[in-house]
Image (cartoon, rainbow over all chains, first blue to last red; front, side, top):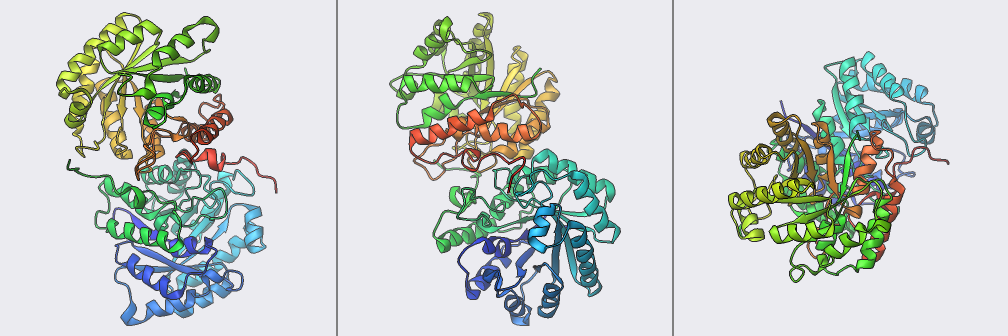
Length: 305
Length: 305
């Protein structure tokens, strides 16, 4: 049993936020390198309409590539995000190992993303998740905008918990609360996850954090503190829109692992490789990325002077 | 009884890290504005040799100014950092209300700063603190490099606690652990402060955090979690040396207050004013400063679209 699980989502949540489309060849290189770091799950991409999101147009191709025996990554699960039945079908056909899907706790966000109310979207997602589980796939269900919404502001904790209850009632244990807008506050994180563990002490809770207001690591620590063991993060902190004042994206994988390794957790993860990938990404995108320790280096154990 | 106490140290720890010397007139403006925000303690400067640190040369002048009846700030305590008996004497003469003084848990840091071993420095500081207390002044004693040292790396927790014990034994309750190098990790923060409260449940614990590796707010939350109620921070996150790769300074006052206000603590502090001062500082120094929310804005309560 691992101390914590790192789900690297930069290839999806990071790259979809970039204006430029990263070439498939470059994506393959990064996925391979990430696979060598010891992170546990890599999100390869999402199955969306390629016309609406050209950054994710090669998701099927990437899964097909890594499904080939000679390209298979060792000890890494490859996940894919699906938004609808069509995406699920595509994912089934190209070798996705873990399906991630979710609903937004914000009605405005749900309407904008899916054209459905949260309730309608929940019924649909539960059907999709059942079908993926029945095919022997791993499934993670999430509540997006669980801690606040860029459109609506505050989100009721009761609403988030009622969505989580529906997931649990339908047998889905792998439950992600996503801080889509970066509004989460550490005590809120503790309150919500504690409430989920009260609903089901065996829930396999995940948190997906953004560092928009600088609270990403504080929130990750708070989540760990109350029993969350799976964390979604992006190398170099990719995931912020580079064209807004609010540049910070997902919590950075190397910053997160750095904190946890200093707590003596997951010392097997090769943090220097993670830092190397973050540096490469900064060179590739030709700008400073939000991650911290790829710039500062790790906290030194012993300095020689 | 206030939820938490904010000790604003930007005028000292922030400005001493800047190459340029800020004019006294500008310092007075900032101290007045900070005094209007509702922060509790403002560190005006340190009493060091003005030849060695011209940035702090006007500390006596500033205290004299704010001691005049017509310039007195309402509901704010003015603190000053003293390193030796000469500084204490100067501080006594110009109206310091709270004396801050400390020793480093790192022998290398102690030698470089004071030319003394930690043990020698402790004896000296205890004498100075007694004398300040006897004069009716508030006194805060601190252990610097309490969580790690830029020269030595790891610092023994036993050593930190033995220094704290000496302070407690001598009747000093107001005890600050300073993360001078920014090496602190949230679980270490919890461990050390929990151990202090075990030594004395009535200790008045303070933490002074730097955001060097992005862990400032996570550490502040961890400290709050175990009962620390006083936090030292700098407006705009000043305090980093602008000429190194590691740009982050003290944890930023407005970011810290933003987190705590979102936990429903200290809603009386005027955070918009704090943000305004941080923006002014960025304009003054003509560069982007490390603070986050003066750039992103606060987490919106309700957005209109």
